[in-house]
Image (cartoon, rainbow, N blue to C red; front, top):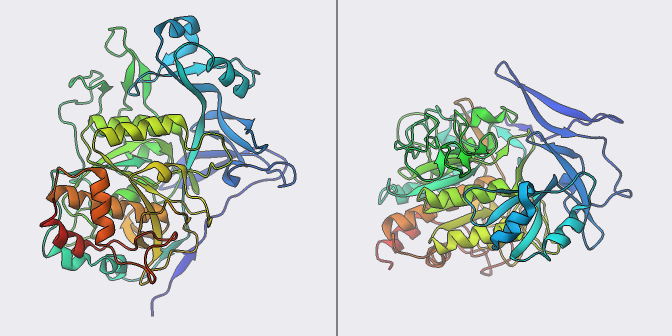
Amino acid sequence: MNNLILMSQKRIILAAIAITTIVVIAGGIYLAISYKNPQSPAETVYSDPDLQDITSVNGKRLQEITLPNGKKTKVRAEVLMVRITDPNTVKTLGGRATPFPGIPQVYEVKVPVGKDLMQAKAELEKMPGVAYAEPDYINFAQALPRIIPNDTHIANQASLNDISAPEAWALNTGSSGTTIAIIDSGAWGTHPDLVNKYSINAADPVDGVDNDGNGYVDDNFGMDFVRGTIRDANGDGTVEWVNDANGADDDNHGGLNGDGHGTAVAGAAAAQSNNGAGVASVNWNARILPIAVGSDGGGDITYFESHVAAGIYYSIARGAQVISLSIGRLCAAETTCPSELMRQSMQAAQASNVVTVAATGNNSTSNEIHNIARIATIAVAAIDTGTLTKASYSNSGPEVDIGAPVPVVTTQKGGGYVPMAGTSLATPQVAAAAAYVLGLNPGLSPAQVLNVLQATANAPPGGRNNDVGAGRINLYKLIRFCQTCI
């Protein structure tokens, strides 16, 4: 009998003082998220409880704001994300407004220290040509308990049997002409099951110059919107994103979580397969475009929405056909949910015929799913392996489109392998399935791709429901169907 070791996520919070969690991995010391002594629920009620103890993200300070319904949230301090269509308003704001490269008409606008953000928002929205002004909200990717078995990797990949992958692979193993953008914490650049799967931009080597003229400097190995900088790198008066020297390599983001959330998500979608080692993935041939938008913090992985939006626009610029988003937050308490910035970004993806696939979240809610999933092409639930029932933690609601089985055995930061669960690991499986559809029928729209996935899913008892939508993806039925679908 296999011995299973269940490792639960825990936060370490010391009373009465602010601390920063320190995680030591493979001989390196890395900084995680800063926390403070938590207030009791009676003192502060947050729109998302995960926010209560966080004081900084990626080294940037946060501030608390009160929402119209009286609940509180935390956002990036002294900054608003503003869409401005009138050049005169940009001039009026002067040095307070900095263009946010890659996202049309969006600026970072500094708010004076001590000034109420929501008051500043109201003032800005009265100015000519301001479409919206809003805080830079925080999103999460939630790490669930890990199951560490003592047997071989493939013997523990029951999730692949659940979606009839072995039968599907006899017909098709995916197309190298399709690219899945993984917007997450980056991906381990030298992992043996990933190193040959990345979509490398050979036209832009790392030399401090935007060689291919795409507006992103040194985006050879994806883009790092956490450690990347915004500056005029070419001296032409235009600011652009300048990549970190290591690009979107997951080792940039601290080793703060031993597995590496982005590395795990990438492997679940398209790790190298049938190579006599490691794990098999859903889509053997699709390429992976790693995009780092947040830090991997040993529990909840945190992301500013401005970086997520930048990642979506970059995915479009690089020609990705599918975007996998294992991130999000609960935000029903807010006046605008999802935010205007996220709506603008997702609409841009839709207009570019890009399929967006997002996790519903792991909050155990029965009437609300994560913000990004609400406006993505496909909202993905987690389904317990061997069943057609949602995992207990998987959020449910009428927006849920489909599900995929967990746990999965996937690639681990540092070069190893690990079983992981959560809607975060269900999402890349569906993204990989969507890439199969587009590999067989490149002209399909995002809505048509969703229709194919739902039409070929294994439906739950009683048919579609708010827990798992149309049911569990079935790769074999999908490929059989798509050999003739138009």
